[in-house]
Structure formats: C-alpha cells, structure tokens
Length: 233
Image (cartoon, rainbow, N blue to C red; front, top):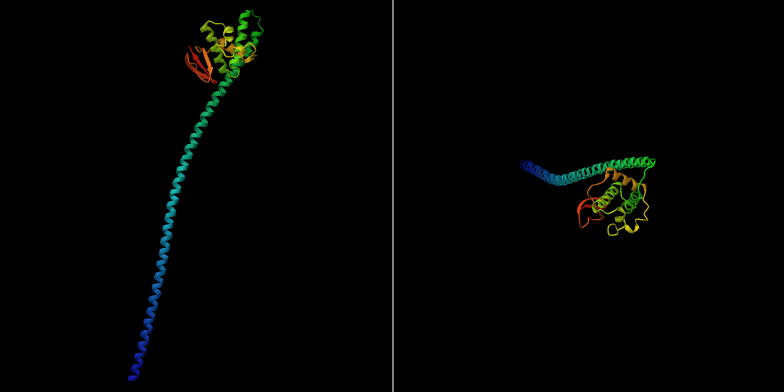
C-alpha cells in the first residue's frame, strides 16, 4: 500500500514537473512573440515616421512648385503684355508708313501733273529749290520721311527767322557743317517730294535748329526724330 502511494506521488510529481515545463515553454514562447510584435510595431512606427517626413517634404516641394508656377504665369503675363505693346507699336508704324507712302505717291502724281504744265519760274526760285534739295540730302538723306520733313521744315523756318537765303545758309559752314559738300550732292526724288509736301501745308512750325545726339546749348528743345534733336528759338 505504501509502495502504491509512493508510485502515485512520483507520478503526480512527474506530471507537475511536466506541467511546469510546459508552462515555462509557453511563457518563453509568449515572451518571444511579444518581443517580435514589439519589433514589428517599432518597424511600423519608424516607417510611419518616414512616410510622414516624406509627405511633409512632398508638401513643401508642392508649395515650391506652386510658387514657381505662379512666377511663370506672372512672367508669361508680362511677356504677353509686352508682345501686345509691340504689336500695337508695329501696327502704328505700319499705318504711319502706309500713310507716308500714300502721301509720297500723291505728291509724285502731283509732281508729274505739274511737269506737264508749262510754267515760268525765275532762276532764283529754281536754284533755291535745288540747293534746298541738296542741303536736305546731305543733312537727312538717310532719315525716314518724318525725319526729312522735320529737317526741311527747320531749314525753311530758319530762313524765315534769320532773313537769310537758302543758298547763303547752305554754303555757310558755321550754319551747316555739310556746307562744303552741298554742291556735289545728288538728291533723289524723295527730297523733292519732301520739299513739295512741306511747302504745301506739311511744314512743322517753330523749329529752326537741329543736330545729332543732343540738343543745342541754345534755343528751346522741342523733340527728337531719327536721332536728330530739334529746337526752337
């Protein structure tokens, strides 16, 4: 009887040991699982922080892109505005050029009509016209129609203001620096057309003096045309 009891106690002790080992194994496994879960959680947290940082950087880059796009739109708007201004100026220039060509053609037709009519002119008038054309050619032959009209007007206004003749002024180096080369000039039809236009109502009033690059030290500045600065007394 004692031997059976002893065997039973041994069995019970063995079972207890087995249960204790099982519980220990389960505790170790649970701890390992907890450790793995904690590491996984840490990894997820790190990845989440990294994603937040990347998202923040993306937002910042997006804001910078929006600023650059806004700046580009501003530049585009300014360019379009300048292009429109250039187109307007080009249109004005083309209209002005067409008007000048129309006036030139009308003057040429009028000149051709005048040539078919027999008129009596004094030698002095014919000579002054030729000298004026030569002087105009030397002073403004390379200028636009407007520039030549202003130059011719200034010469005629100076003649009226000073009481001197065109021939006298054209050969006075103190008045015109091109005086030594006036007689050898070969004016074109344009200079004669300009003279006709100015003498038939197209004269610019008051201006008498002109020079290149800057105004004279005397007189009152009026305007600049084709790099020539015109003044009045």
